[in-house]
Amino acid sequence: MAQPDPTGQLWSLDEYIVVADLYLRRGHSSGARDRAVEELARLTRRTTGSISRRLGNYQGTLHPGRGLKPVTGEALAVFKAMAAEPQVREQLTAQARERLEAGLPSGAMQIPATAATRLVDTEQMRITETEVTYSETTRTVVRAEAQLVDRYLAWLTKKGRAMSSVLLPSESGTLRVDLFDRAQNLLIEAKAGSSREYIRYAIGQLMDYRRRISPRPNLAVLLPEAPAPDMLALLRELHISVIFEADSRFMDPTFKPTG
Image (cartoon, rainbow, N blue to C red):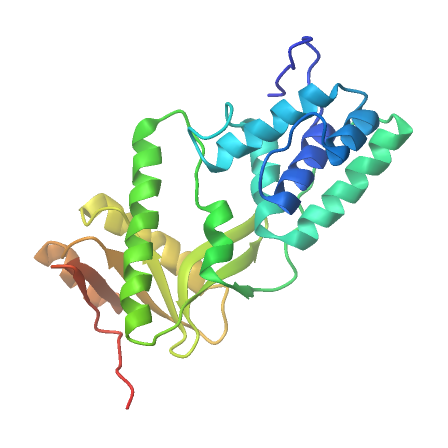
């Protein structure tokens, strides 16, 4: 649902898009006297203060507690697609600017899928890691998964092993895989817990991701602790490796020392 600004006027999706584009290009919010903010105010026929506040909403979307209220609904879905794929961001922004310049209403939104699977640096994926919701539980889970990935990457760096992330095209936009070891053709999905629920969720994600990659990749889950024997047996039956944290190190059967 579109949100009103302080004047009560609802924001169109095209207005959200052009402001999201500015935020993603800069990586931070901007004040009302910024030239780019002034240009968007002219384009959208809104005040510079209104544009600046909306930038603050995007800041709060990616960094809860450090900005204004997060965006929601369709604007959030489009923002995620723009953040994950620069080509999508550029295409949607160009179309939105054309309609705004002409005074036309927002068109029906179809987020274009990426043409091919892309490898990206793990740091680049930070922008899509925050799932925005009003549930503090979900925010806690997302934060715990991100912190687990960070600890694992720090442990790997000491051992000279590099990781990437992967963006996968889908009919609804772009899917993100937590970690990918290109040398071993290995997909890794991180979870905040080792319970049955977390592991079943990870299995579904990995099976979906694997269908979209050629050659067929190996699979692994990254967990904060060892799973129960029954879950470990299930993962082994599915040929999914289990990486888990123990005593500030990781038990990683996929790690192959070199030299």
